[in-house]
Length: 218
Image (cartoon, rainbow, N blue to C red):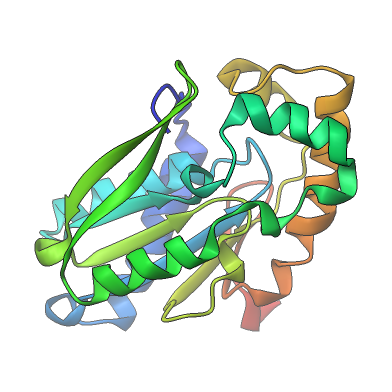
């Protein structure tokens, strides 16, 4: 999202480096083509920071990665979504708020190396702009967002950041994507319930200390 603030720290660098090492050690870099990574976690857990760093470190290796922020795929823009949620109640807050058909369309266009028109939410104006992307030279797609692990289609690696909204309250306030009030606290609790249900789908878990653990080793 345009206007989103990244708060990159050493812990994010540590996790991203670990994930990139795991990818490259298990996949020959010259065959790392049309590879898809999904990263899920609660609000403020560091999804955007880790995704950005993974993309940066892959670029250092000559591998181009594009980040697809799934929060850009909400059917309703942020300001209207806040009012609609208050009207429809907390149970309406879940993965059905996303336009999954459009997400799958853009994943398909990535795999087929096509030119794609992606939604791009401007938090400063609450408008949904359009971003034209040519996937021809892109080797890796990073799907980043609350419910990204729900995507099963063609995902090669699923990462879950195991921090709750209680752990990330400071980061949420600093980033200021949404006003923090009593209703926002209830929204975070509801998101917590839905996002945590996706944890069993993960291949890798990023712990509270930002260590990266293979689910098979747990």
